[in-house]
Length: 557
Image (cartoon, rainbow, N blue to C red):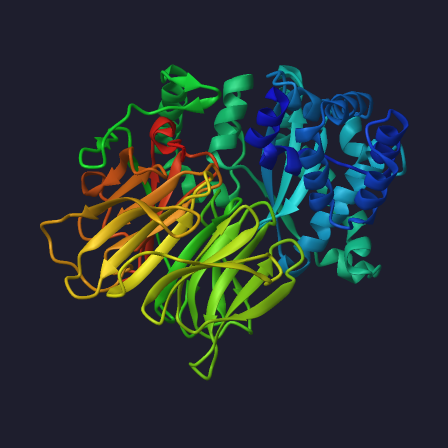
């Protein structure tokens, strides 16, 4: 279904700017878009994001629900959502950062703003109605390192109004008024002294400023200098040039499509194609309070875990700013994986007795924590769909354990690999097969494998057969997969990252030492397929690369 592809391709944007309030649900029920059971399920969901996620999941399988939803969006002042669902290009979403001196309440403030947007769409009393009176259409908010505000501009005049309001300070003044009225709701305090303590500042990322300039011809940075913008002013010309080149490349790139997928020319595993479009965008440091272990991308945030530490570093993929999160149950993390459908991360953790291990599930939206014990020989963790997979070597046998999101063991897959395997890592492809790396304990040679669902090896090839290796996967190679099903292999010794399919018939080099990649211990690809994050443990840094979308969208067949 074409509409299902549109939803999947734009799901993150849709989740940010869709408001599914009681009025919208009532309309969907009245128009026959939802059954009684579906209405009960979605009303019981307290999280607005999960409510939207559930509804979009239903829409992907029901054209009737999709058509009703598009109609309801058009009738309830959410035409930006219907335009996006129909694939129309009229209108743009502009994101702005709202920074406050009270970061501890920014999540509550963000929730209060979202609720107020829902109230306005339902014709109820709303503090943000004053914004609408000035032609400013606020459609959503969510917490980040700041509060991210999303404004919808249906046409050029709306973008011009937004740009001029931002530059003149009118938008800042209006938002201050709105926040003062929402503060008591967010903190359950109503004293004027509390309200007076709140200080805010509004800022734009360079990419958003370039988008406004492209639409309106106005350079908002020339007329307004916020302290955060002054910091990037010296680099603005370089970033603007780079962004303009990226836009040009995106529009002019020739894409070979087959059933909606980008297809690469077929190459044997022994002769890979090389990417000429990769470029280093940024390199940022990590904390050195304890050794870095691994990283995982979830939506628009990068999670970095450390050994013997309960502190997780969380970086925004928009501006690379860091916040820390304490998870006291985590004592000695060994690996981390993310699950986009469930909006959570899984951490493989060693308990303090050093004899037991567990998987810790951390929900991003609610900060809820669940955990369950796993075998102490567990090596690596991965996620496919909503299920969790553990790679381990038990009694000499390389095995894969599959768990539900709640920790119930579904099955144990015993591979047919010989018993001298010293390390083993597996990633489940969308085909149901596993792509694995296995290390021979005696020779140190490394093999890239395609393994069937029953543990049978279907394809096998040596990685750098002429070179002696170590006895550990992570010393040289690392496997990961992204939300699009692309499987990545990183080679630390040669400083290369490839994309492979589940049959090992295609191997495409994404980035290498010639692009300034340095000894990657782990990699991750963002949801756009255009940015690759590479972890260097010894230097405690993350490198960010722009790569060609055509090369990153190699699908597992």
